[in-house]
Length: 346
Ligand code: NAD
Image (cartoon, rainbow, N blue to C red):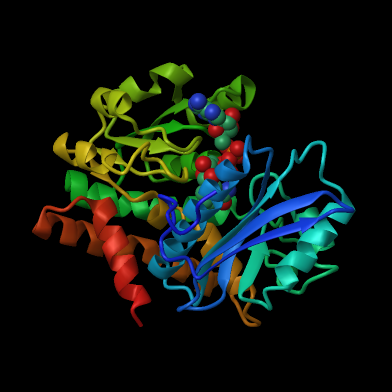
């Protein structure tokens, strides 16, 4: 299994493979970059079909975290961890404690956090064998759910995208289609509704969708039809890789801005969006609200106001990305990567 010649290898500083015979742990931690600070990134637990698939995921996701933290102006680098296991079957306290020892062996250069397949209670078990865990120590009463912060960031991003892409200063009467009204999508829908937007919602989970649509007076569409909605903005808040050539060609929206990670099926889709005159808000810029809140929580004197001000800065970052994109003709996703790399050369 090549590492240095792997297509997703991007001068990662450290790639570590960990195993523990007793608990059955098989894990990989990738530290992409620590120039801005320790590498923060979630722990994904997933039954990968092969070690090679796990390596691909961890290399790609750790690089993404470096860029996300740099553009969110956080004193953090980028890293990620994966355990090759089925979280519903294989996740035992022994496995998690072994993972904690693996994280600890990196001496704090990698800080772990929740991701798909791992929960806050798993983080508490991992914390028994390493202090390098984030997402703990919330104040009593905090839900521990980052999605309201992520949604706030997407809302700020959407305001910026609408100004640049549609020349509109407010959201009153704006038509927005949201794909996926789970944790982030539902919060986003409520904020957009409050700002006067008209919503078209879709979700594969029917009942919560219907309830939310009733609450907000929104229209609903079947999952397969949401791309054809006659709207100004398309907000992907469900799955990754949703923007492929077929979908992009169907969109009527002139702005794409949502919470989902890795929305572009392939990097060249950013050019295809631009060619169709659709302004794309790069996903890792728009959805950084959650990681901003996690980073602030590690500081002793984080006030909610300070966190919210930082999250609102996502709109300023996008203003800069869109302005540069317009003046250079380069698509916003490529500009975001450029800007992130500039912020790493500190
Ligand atoms: P979630 O699981 O709560 O919500 C996703 C929703 O999408 C669910 O309601 C699901 O039923 C729906 N869905 C799945 N497939 C669909 C389809 N084909 N069409 C329509 N709906 C579909 O997840 P979430 O926490 O709201 O996160 C949404 C996205 O944002 C994910 O891609 C996640 O990686 C990303 N993200 C989330 C956060 C966060 O703070 N939760 C932070 C950064 C990025």
